[in-house]
Length: 178
Image (tube, rainbow, N blue to C red; front, top):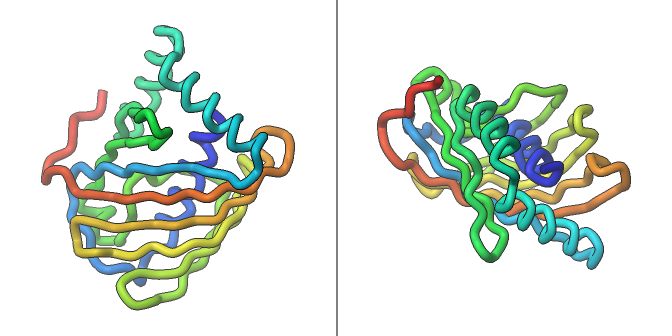
């Protein structure tokens, strides 16, 4: 679960300062992310976390589902290769702010620098403690790619991970929040 928090924190930091990005469409978006590490132990821990996510006890899964639904996101779907896919709503207001899906509230600061077709971003978060740099490129108003290098101590020790994501627009409507 902590590795999912790392990924969501990185995505949240990106959305906090996306004013230079091209316009995105409101509606349901799906973000697919793969978290990886060059460190053998961290990589094994990531693999184990993905397996555990796929095998959560029903009560824990229901609790996670309820929390995510309350925040406009679906439960993560984990593929065999460890890619995590989450659907989230981009409201018209978020689209006007050029805010990416999966915006999480947190103690994060970020900066962005315009580049052709997107932006470079850097972020720092206090909870969980993490920081990173990356690039978001918009293919069009329905698709983007992201590559991030993230350092975190979310699991109690320093970990460096790479997060590669793609985002795609699914529909103009969002599921109702419970």
